[in-house]
Amino acid sequence: MVPLLLALAGAGSVQAQSSSDDGSASDATASDATASDATASDATASDATASGGDADPDGEEAVGDRIPGRAAARSHDRPASIEVRGDAIMRWAPRWVLDVRETEVGVSQRFWHRVDELPLTMRISLDADRLMDGRVGVHIAAWGALDLTVDTEGGIAAGDVAVGYADARLGKATVWLGRRFMTWGPPGGLHLDGAGARVLLPAGFDAEVFAGRPVVSRLLTSTGASDNLTQPTGAYGARLGWNAAGLVAADIAFVQRWAKGLETDRLVDVGVSARPHRYFDLRAGGTWDVRTSRPSQAFGEAELAATRHVHLDAAYTYVDPRALLPDWSVLKAFSSMLYEEASLGATLHLVETFDVRVEGAYRRSWMPDVQDVAALDGYRVDVYARIVPRDRGVALRVLASRRDDGVQGYTLLQAAFAVDPLRDLRLALELSAAFDDALDREAYVARLTGEYKVADAWTVGVTVDAARTPSADAELRGLLRASYRREVTP
Image (cartoon, rainbow, N blue to C red):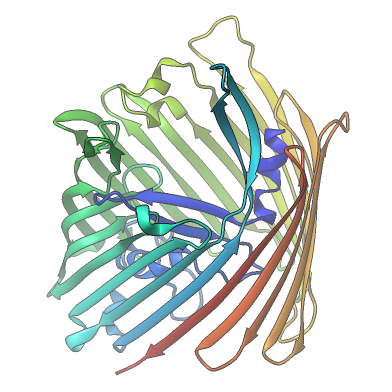
C-alpha cells in the first residue's frame, strides 16, 4: 500500500511543516506543474540567488551555477527590484484519525473515523534586491494559518516568519543577518537564525561562513513549552568555492551542529561540476560525517547532447538514512536499509514542441549490520512524453512507469493536459492510477484545476481532487487560492 500512495503523491497536494522557536509550524505546499500554488522556494528564491544558481544572462547555464553556494557576482550589475507576493489558500481535505475511547466498564475501544478540515493559510513575501546602488537587500516571507472548522480559542491558529534577513554588499564581501535557508552543508540544507558573510577572492575563489541557531521545534506540555532535545540548537559552517573560467567549479564545506552542548554531527559537503565540452556536463558530490568517515549521501551525474535531437544521461545515487539521524535518536537503535540507484536515460527532441524520454534504473537496498536479511534488488522503467505549445494551445504530458522495490511490484500511469480556452483562463486535468501485480491494491486520483488572471497582479484558482486509495474507498478534496504578485523596478 505504501508504494502505491507514494507513487500517487505527485497527483495530490503535499504538505510540509517546519517548526520554529516560538512553537509554531510553518506550512508550505508543493503542487504539480499544472497548478500555480505558491511554494516555499518561491518565497525564498532570493536565498538561491544569494548563494548561487543565477541564470546566465544569455540563457545558458554557467558551469558551477548548479553547485549550492556558488554565487554569481554579475547579479549585482542588474537594476534594483522589489517583488511583493501574497497568497491566500483555503483547503478542504478530510483525513482519517485513530480515536481511543473508554466504555462505561473501562474497556478501551479504538476505531478510525473521518475528520473534515478547512484550513485557511495566508502567505506573504517581500524580496527587495540591489537597493542603495546595489548594496542592500531585504527578504521577508511569513505565513499564518487558521482551521475554520475548529474553535481557535485554544490557540489553534498558528503563524511564523519563514525568512527574514537583510544583506549588505561591502566591496567584494557580502554580509547578512536574520533567518534564512542555507543551501549548502547538511542534506536538505539548514534553516537558520544567525549571521554570515561571503567574500570574493582572487583566481576565481570565494569563501563563506555562518553561525547561529537552527530553527527548532518546541514541545507544548502541561508544564509549558520546552525545547525538543532531539533537534540541533547550534551550528556553524564554512565553505570554499572555486570556478576556473567556466570550465570547472568545485565547493567544499564543513558544518558542525550540536544540541544542548551535545555534538550531533560534523559534516563535510563536497560538490564538483565540469564541462569538458559544450555538449558534455559532469556533476558529482557527497556528504560525509567526519566522526565516522561514513558517507550519508553521494551522487554522480553525466549529460551528453549526442545530437541536436538526442540527449543521453547517466546518474548514481547513494543514501544512508542512519547517518542522517542524531546519535541519541530512538530510530538510531533500529537498523535502516541503505539505498543506491544507478540509472540511464535518453531524451528525444523529435520536434520543437514534442519530447519523449525513456529511463531505466537499478535499485538496491540492504542492511549492512544484519547478516540474515538479504539485500533487495529492484528496478524502475519510465516512459515519458510531453507536448509543450509555443504560445497558447494544448499541453500534454503522459507517464508510464513500471517499478519494483524488491518486495512489491506495481505500475504507475499518469496523464495530464492543459488548455487555454480564453486568454486569461487556463484549465488542467490530471489522471493517475497505480496498481500492484496481484491487483490486491489499487489507487486512483483525478485532479481538475482552473486558473484565471483577474488583473495584472491577481490570479485566482480552484482545484478539486477525487481519490480512491486502499485506505479510503472514496475521497474528495478541494482547494481555493488567490495570489497577488507585483514586481517594481525603482
